[in-house]
Length: 120
Figure 1 (cartoon, rainbow, N blue to C red):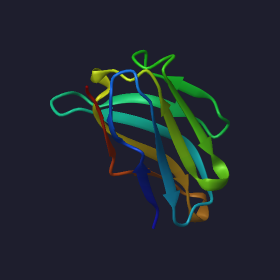
Figure 2 (cartoon, rainbow, N blue to C red):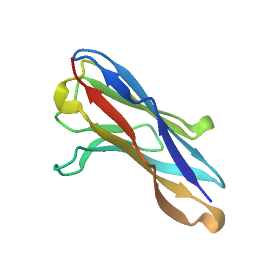
Figure 3 (spheres, rainbow, N blue to C red):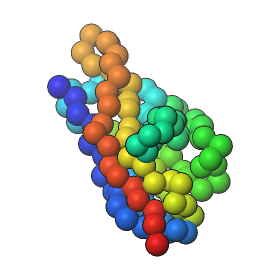
Figure 4 (cartoon, rainbow, N blue to C red):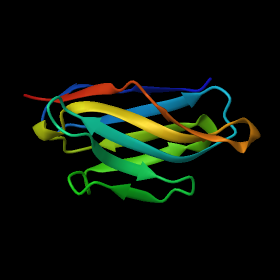
């Protein structure tokens, strides 16, 4: 069984920084794209950033220039460095990953999320 576990969330003042991590564990033969999402209660889920297995990245317009997604394939982990945080970045952040398992079958797994609150 594969699990994704996010960490690194917390309370930060506007203008501050946080680094989120999402680590995959279990029977993993490879990982394709890894994605960060966020959702605030009452709002639609928003795709924040995507990184492919080759390292290509894509960002929501709302976070371009402030957030950086990266991954460590040896650790099966994806990161989200968040700088110049704004109150509107407040949300539950969670990741998903397209994971290659036995028999080269791929599955999409989701983490439980880590809360980010930006407030003075």
